[in-house]
Image (tube, rainbow, N blue to C red; front, side):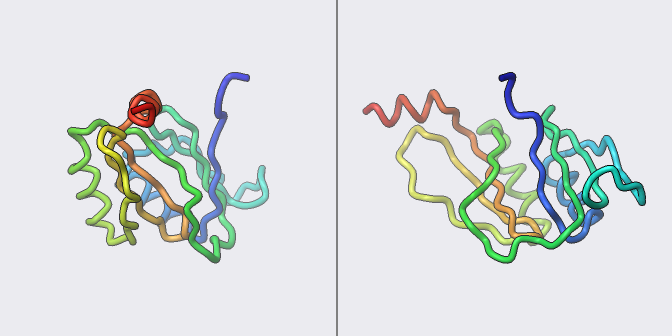
Length: 132
């Protein structure tokens, strides 16, 4: 196994989601199916920090859950990303209780009830902290 190939979300409005991804994550759009149908519906592909991220047009999630995708950010970038999220007016979720040393997180929903996290910590830091 080599790792994660791509992440796919179903979204109601491809253009609205594209603007969301570009604004917050500086996503680079690399493909738009337009009216072609190679998949189950219209789709767009993006690169976010080198990760292939796909969105396909369809019915959004009906409920919000804690299932989420977390992207790593630098501690010094936390405020920058927090401002980006707030300018879009999307719903933010309060961070879960954390112990010191496991990083900070910003949780927010897109327009289709997908939860995203921007996190400053690493797995190694968290495991070290949990050992204490």
